[in-house]
Length: 180
Image (cartoon, rainbow, N blue to C red; front, side, top):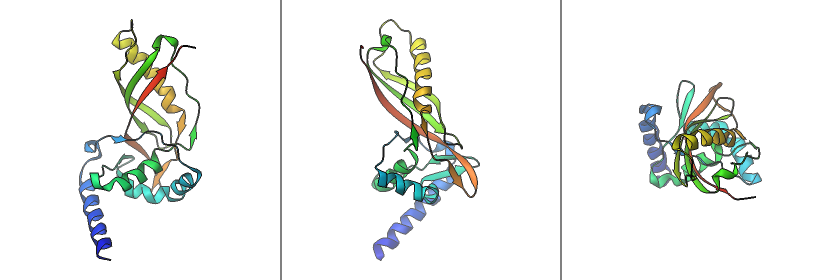
Protein backbone atom coordinates (compact mmCIF):
# COMPACT_ATOMS: atom_id res chain seq x y z
CA UNK A 1 0.00 0.00 0.00
CA UNK A 2 2.84 2.37 0.89
CA UNK A 3 4.57 1.66 -2.45
CA UNK A 4 1.35 2.38 -4.36
CA UNK A 5 0.93 5.69 -2.52
CA UNK A 6 4.52 6.71 -3.36
CA UNK A 7 3.96 5.77 -7.01
CA UNK A 8 0.74 7.79 -7.17
CA UNK A 9 2.46 10.81 -5.58
CA UNK A 10 5.34 10.51 -8.06
CA UNK A 11 2.93 10.43 -11.02
CA UNK A 12 1.00 13.41 -9.62
CA UNK A 13 4.25 15.38 -9.33
CA UNK A 14 5.24 14.34 -12.86
CA UNK A 15 1.84 15.46 -14.19
CA UNK A 16 2.18 18.86 -12.51
CA UNK A 17 5.65 19.40 -14.00
CA UNK A 18 4.61 18.37 -17.52
CA UNK A 19 1.37 20.35 -17.42
CA UNK A 20 3.23 23.55 -16.49
CA UNK A 21 5.59 23.28 -19.49
CA UNK A 22 4.42 24.53 -22.90
CA UNK A 23 4.18 21.65 -25.34
CA UNK A 24 6.67 23.40 -27.64
CA UNK A 25 9.34 22.76 -24.96
CA UNK A 26 8.64 19.04 -24.64
CA UNK A 27 11.38 17.09 -26.44
CA UNK A 28 10.74 14.93 -29.48
CA UNK A 29 9.46 11.47 -28.56
CA UNK A 30 11.10 8.44 -30.19
CA UNK A 31 8.12 6.92 -31.95
CA UNK A 32 8.98 4.24 -34.51
CA UNK A 33 6.01 2.48 -36.08
CA UNK A 34 5.77 -0.53 -33.79
CA UNK A 35 4.10 -3.82 -34.65
CA UNK A 36 1.95 -5.30 -31.92
CA UNK A 37 0.63 -8.79 -31.34
CA UNK A 38 -3.12 -9.31 -31.60
CA UNK A 39 -3.48 -9.00 -27.81
CA UNK A 40 -1.30 -5.85 -27.82
CA UNK A 41 -3.51 -4.30 -30.50
CA UNK A 42 -6.62 -5.14 -28.50
CA UNK A 43 -5.13 -3.63 -25.31
CA UNK A 44 -4.13 -0.44 -27.17
CA UNK A 45 -7.60 -0.14 -28.73
CA UNK A 46 -9.49 -0.73 -25.48
CA UNK A 47 -7.37 1.75 -23.50
CA UNK A 48 -6.58 4.35 -26.18
CA UNK A 49 -8.73 7.14 -24.73
CA UNK A 50 -7.71 6.42 -21.13
CA UNK A 51 -3.99 6.30 -22.01
CA UNK A 52 -4.28 9.60 -23.93
CA UNK A 53 -4.59 11.47 -20.65
CA UNK A 54 -1.60 9.62 -19.21
CA UNK A 55 0.66 9.86 -22.27
CA UNK A 56 -0.14 13.25 -23.80
CA UNK A 57 0.21 16.87 -22.75
CA UNK A 58 -2.18 19.06 -24.74
CA UNK A 59 -2.57 22.73 -25.58
CA UNK A 60 -5.64 23.43 -27.69
CA UNK A 61 -5.84 20.93 -30.54
CA UNK A 62 -2.13 19.98 -30.34
CA UNK A 63 -0.70 17.37 -28.02
CA UNK A 64 2.83 16.20 -27.33
CA UNK A 65 3.89 12.80 -26.09
CA UNK A 66 4.95 13.16 -22.48
CA UNK A 67 8.69 13.01 -21.70
CA UNK A 68 9.18 10.29 -19.09
CA UNK A 69 12.09 10.17 -16.62
CA UNK A 70 14.57 7.30 -17.08
CA UNK A 71 13.00 5.14 -14.38
CA UNK A 72 9.54 5.23 -16.02
CA UNK A 73 10.35 3.00 -19.02
CA UNK A 74 7.15 0.99 -18.52
CA UNK A 75 4.98 4.09 -18.99
CA UNK A 76 7.03 5.21 -21.99
CA UNK A 77 6.63 1.77 -23.61
CA UNK A 78 2.89 1.77 -22.87
CA UNK A 79 2.57 5.16 -24.59
CA UNK A 80 4.74 4.07 -27.54
CA UNK A 81 2.71 0.87 -28.00
CA UNK A 82 -0.57 2.80 -27.83
CA UNK A 83 0.20 5.79 -30.06
CA UNK A 84 3.08 4.65 -32.34
CA UNK A 85 1.39 1.48 -33.59
CA UNK A 86 -0.46 2.13 -36.84
CA UNK A 87 -3.92 0.63 -37.24
CA UNK A 88 -3.33 0.31 -41.01
CA UNK A 89 -0.09 0.13 -42.99
CA UNK A 90 0.54 -0.04 -46.74
CA UNK A 91 3.68 -1.23 -48.49
CA UNK A 92 6.07 1.72 -48.98
CA UNK A 93 7.41 2.93 -52.29
CA UNK A 94 11.10 2.08 -52.66
CA UNK A 95 14.01 4.39 -53.42
CA UNK A 96 15.39 4.22 -56.94
CA UNK A 97 18.62 2.42 -57.86
CA UNK A 98 20.68 5.64 -57.66
CA UNK A 99 20.45 5.24 -53.87
CA UNK A 100 22.29 1.91 -53.63
CA UNK A 101 23.60 1.21 -50.14
CA UNK A 102 22.50 1.92 -46.60
CA UNK A 103 21.09 5.34 -45.72
CA UNK A 104 20.20 6.52 -42.22
CA UNK A 105 17.65 9.29 -41.77
CA UNK A 106 16.12 10.91 -38.70
CA UNK A 107 12.70 12.39 -39.33
CA UNK A 108 10.26 14.45 -37.29
CA UNK A 109 6.60 13.79 -38.00
CA UNK A 110 3.16 14.46 -36.56
CA UNK A 111 -0.13 12.61 -36.52
CA UNK A 112 -3.12 14.72 -37.59
CA UNK A 113 -6.46 14.74 -35.75
CA UNK A 114 -7.73 12.32 -38.42
CA UNK A 115 -4.91 9.84 -37.70
CA UNK A 116 -2.78 10.65 -40.77
CA UNK A 117 1.00 10.87 -40.42
CA UNK A 118 2.65 14.00 -41.88
CA UNK A 119 6.37 14.67 -42.39
CA UNK A 120 7.63 17.80 -40.60
CA UNK A 121 11.34 17.59 -41.48
CA UNK A 122 14.14 15.11 -42.04
CA UNK A 123 17.86 14.99 -41.41
CA UNK A 124 20.04 12.77 -43.56
CA UNK A 125 22.55 11.21 -41.13
CA UNK A 126 24.78 8.97 -43.24
CA UNK A 127 25.18 7.09 -46.49
CA UNK A 128 24.75 9.89 -49.05
CA UNK A 129 24.82 8.49 -52.59
CA UNK A 130 27.69 9.48 -54.89
CA UNK A 131 27.03 12.20 -57.44
CA UNK A 132 24.06 13.75 -55.64
CA UNK A 133 24.08 17.17 -54.03
CA UNK A 134 22.78 17.64 -50.49
CA UNK A 135 19.75 19.50 -51.92
CA UNK A 136 18.97 16.65 -54.34
CA UNK A 137 19.21 14.09 -51.54
CA UNK A 138 16.98 16.19 -49.24
CA UNK A 139 14.39 16.68 -52.02
CA UNK A 140 14.38 12.96 -52.91
CA UNK A 141 14.13 11.89 -49.28
CA UNK A 142 11.38 14.41 -48.54
CA UNK A 143 9.35 12.80 -51.33
CA UNK A 144 10.27 9.26 -50.25
CA UNK A 145 9.60 9.89 -46.53
CA UNK A 146 6.25 11.56 -47.17
CA UNK A 147 5.15 8.38 -48.92
CA UNK A 148 6.80 6.15 -46.32
CA UNK A 149 5.15 7.95 -43.38
CA UNK A 150 1.76 8.41 -45.04
CA UNK A 151 1.43 4.67 -45.61
CA UNK A 152 0.49 4.40 -41.94
CA UNK A 153 -2.89 5.31 -40.45
CA UNK A 154 -3.30 5.83 -36.71
CA UNK A 155 -6.27 5.77 -34.38
CA UNK A 156 -7.48 9.38 -33.95
CA UNK A 157 -6.90 10.89 -30.51
CA UNK A 158 -10.04 12.18 -28.82
CA UNK A 159 -9.77 13.96 -25.47
CA UNK A 160 -12.89 15.41 -23.85
CA UNK A 161 -14.78 14.99 -27.12
CA UNK A 162 -12.23 16.93 -29.22
CA UNK A 163 -9.92 15.51 -31.92
CA UNK A 164 -6.21 16.17 -31.24
CA UNK A 165 -2.97 15.95 -33.19
CA UNK A 166 0.33 14.63 -31.80
CA UNK A 167 3.16 16.95 -32.82
CA UNK A 168 6.48 15.78 -31.32
CA UNK A 169 7.22 12.40 -32.90
CA UNK A 170 10.58 11.32 -34.28
CA UNK A 171 11.99 8.16 -35.82
CA UNK A 172 15.38 7.15 -37.15
CA UNK A 173 15.58 4.54 -39.90
CA UNK A 174 18.23 2.88 -41.98
CA UNK A 175 17.01 2.05 -45.46
CA UNK A 176 18.86 -0.59 -47.45
CA UNK A 177 18.68 -0.14 -51.22
CA UNK A 178 19.98 -3.14 -53.16
CA UNK A 179 20.48 -3.70 -56.85
CA UNK A 180 17.68 -5.68 -58.52
